[in-house]
Length: 125
View (cartoon, rainbow, N blue to C red):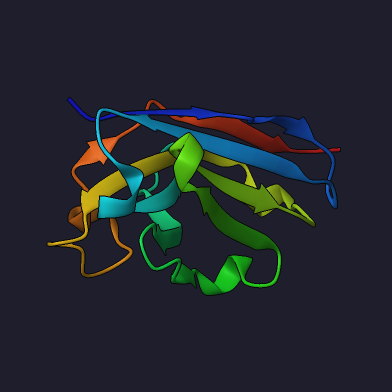
């Protein structure tokens, strides 16, 4: 069974940085795309960034471009999200999710079937 576990969230001041980790188990990472998504209470979950773990190809939501970087370490079966210059609007629960590359099309919530439990990121002074 596929399992994803997020970690690295916490409280940070505006302009600060956090590095989130998504540890995958039960499947070889290089056969999957991994996405980072975030959700604020009362709002729909939204895409942040995705990576094709085989090719390394990445995509980002416009609002995080230039500030966030997604990467993977296939040997460790882990995907990271480096978040720099954090803003209060980045406050959310951050989730990672997986979809097999054979059916991966878009960096969007409906495309992903396996999800982690989420990790809270709070950006506040």
